[in-house]
Image (cartoon, rainbow, N blue to C red; front, side):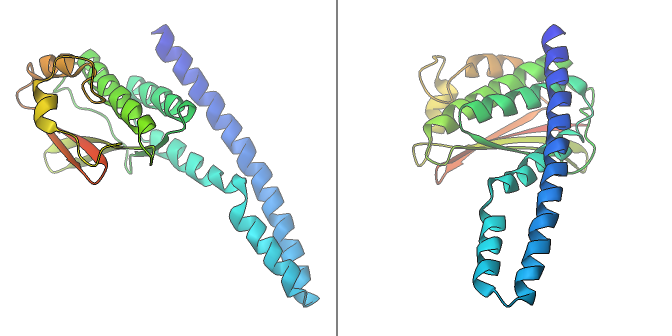
Length: 216
């Protein structure tokens, strides 16, 4: 509980910092647009081009990505899941891994799985994804939560160093030696208690993806 509270407090602080950044960016953006309009009036096309290049290449445009992540996290209605996702997002940034979180609509897990088991599953999948992505060239992790029909879906994908991951060896591995072998024994043990939860794994073109399908 202490860890969850700390993560939520950090999340709140992050949101406040982000909106401060957005306000500053909006102010700077207006100033640039004003100067751009003046340069067009003076027919100074070279200066106008340099201003446009500055706007497009500015590091401040990364705010858009951060804002997208925060807005999607806001759709996660389980406080413990939101806390965990934000914590792993922060860990991914520390490892120079780009983590994209997609939750297009308000989402709350149904009671088909124990909340503690759900946290353990998410932790295992996210830790493995970040660990493997950090070793890859693309350094990407994608997380999606959504509902479709009578099911809820959790999809976690990540870039990989090898073109494909040997799925058969992962299924049989109980050691911690492979990138995606970390804690997979524990994951299989947890999922064995929930036969109604479907677990799909795929790997191709330097991308490894796991899908969990939960009944509502």
